[in-house]
Image 1: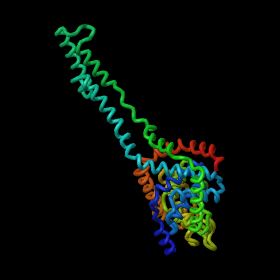
Image 2 (image 1 turned 45 degrees about the vertical axis):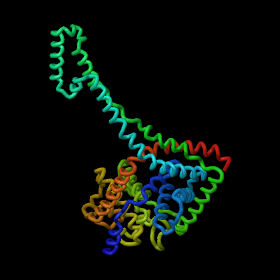
Image 3 (image 1 turned 45 degrees about the horizontal axis):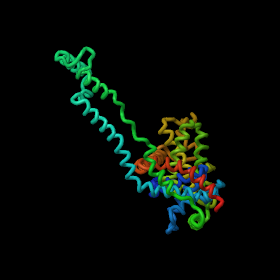
Image 4 (image 1 turned 90 degrees about the horizontal axis):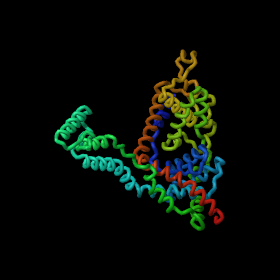
Length: 403
């Protein structure tokens, strides 16, 4: 038992993959193709396995991405048009390259318009108001007394009249206009996507010889991907195990969604699926990852126990983050058992705490990478890509006869 626990503990560290950008692009392609979640998870597992293998070679990223999506649609029986798949992969890759080139121009748009507009309006109004431009920062009572003094002075000097049309009235009107000046509206977010929209128009749909060349590159990449997977294309996904365990715990729907979101992030952007050994059939005599069959979880195959442990750790992390407490039967609580031990996981509270810490640290690392990279790019990419999806489908259908 001690050797097993130590071996699992050494593999409890979950790290963000260095090809974070490729995972984001693959998810964008799957979203445009409207692939079901299971097919997307399978394609991500193929990408992780491909990157880990020694067969990376000199294949283009677009060909590898298309091969992962193409193989996943066949394995998960989610039929997709080859024409749409290849054109979506080309479009997303083209937009990503254009995004890097236009990044400096977006930063200029984001940082230039709101501040400059506000500063310019303030300077113009200050020039019109003269010395009364300082009234905005004054105390209201002091401002009132100051304006009253000016009005009296103007009346005494004979420069104004009872209707208040003198210099003091003009100054008061200017000060009121300054106070009532509306705040400048923020820059239109759609304007930030204009360079990407132009990039979409520059991306031609694959037709003729170019289409067949891209298709042949995808098929070649698929053959190399199959060899890297050793033709074990079945992916044992832990999502059904998570949902079944959450149902057993009577977990609220919101906490279930949080746990599923955590698992999806770890599956897409970390090496979790590599640690679970998801591709291929299980070793002889070992149950699949998604089963909680006998043995109590204390012994047995390492892959099965690690899969169960990872899923239950995600559930515990979601429960802690949401503040929801899992209810344990009275007799089990009196015996000192935790809820995960009732589901077949032989770890005490300290062991579960270590796994939960690893899960939460990996999730935080994913969001740190996303905030440093996607914050400046993903909003504009997402808007332009969504707008381009209809165009690809329309042009692909219109030119389908040529293919």
